[in-house]
Structures are given as structure tokens and as C-alpha cells.
Length: 243
Image (cartoon, helix red, strand yellow):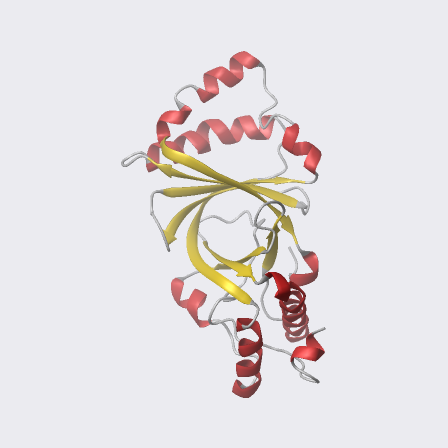
């Protein structure tokens, strides 16, 4: 429990280092900054990490400040967590809001550092979105590199062709984000929200074959390299704020 890590302290914290900003992954808003802090936790420290994150969420709820969403890999790197925050600007992303005194923050940060094996931070711009009808349990993430000079063409295809087809087939929400900071700026990450594992086996686009073939003609020409695909599970007990 967190009390074993920081006895008797009620943790409120500064989201300045790797938990900055407010978040709503299911937001309909575009042109927002989406910061992803991918944290690989030491295998023998997962319980402590979860306790610290839960205590942080409780402190933020008590203070009525901000929202953030915690997701966990569901296969392979299951000790890896993705903390998602949303902001209007890079300044907001970096500043956070102080809700505890410096001594308590130093203790919390020291305890958290002991649980982490590695971490990386990337920031995306939300380009397009189909809001989810309800809170999903999983998100299927695909990250791909767009060929130079074809970003605008790809996003135009998504907005004017793919999104209408996805909405017609009854998808429960999707997002498309472009990498701005922390990697190749030609990277596009798309997220498809699902409620159960069974949906992984269902067709992404429930369309007649002729319509699907026409829609996807030339699709692979947008990309270069391999796709990085993984599934994340929403961790409600470590997240905070309303959707």
C-alpha cells in the first residue's frame, strides 16, 4: 500500500515531470496536444507503482484538478503503462499545477523513481476524431510512418473517405494523432476503441467487399516501414476525472 511507501502523507502532486496537463482521450476536440508518458515498471515494483498512482488520483480528485488516463499493455510488455494527458499548449504541458508542498513532492517523486525501469515521453497533436459513444475498455493503437509529402493527403483521405465509412459501419470511436515531439514527425498514431477482446476478431469496416476494396485502394502507398500495433487496457483505478 502507499502508506508503506509514504506513511501518513496524503499525496497531492505537481504534474510537472511526467504527469502534466489535463486529459480526455475520448475528446471530440481536435488540434489538442496529447502527451503520452510510457513507463516501464520494474517487475517487482508494480504493486508500489499502482499504489502511488492510485494515491495521486485520489489527491487530484480531492483537489478537483485535472484529468488523466492510465492504460496498461495487455500482452507482451504488460509491465508497461501509458499515462495520457491533454493540453492546449506546450507551456501548459510542461508547467502542471502545484498542489502539495515541495517536501512531500520530493518524497513522492523519490518513491516513484524507485519503481521505474525506463520511461519516454512523446507529444502528439490530435488531428481527427470520432468520439466514443461510451467509455471503452481497450484501445487498439497503430503507429505508422507516413511517406514524406503525403501527410496532408493521408489526413484528407481519413477525413473525407475513411471516417464516413467507419461511422457507417458503427465503430465506437477512433482518434488520429500526429507526432510532434519525441520522435519522427511523420508518425501517425491511430486509436480504435473497443469494449471486449471479441471485437479484435471482428472486421474493422463492416462494408460490402466492393465498397471496402474501393475505399482501401492505394491505402498502403501512404506508409513506409512496418506498423507498430499494440492493445492497451483502461485502468480506471489509477485514472482520474470525468470523461
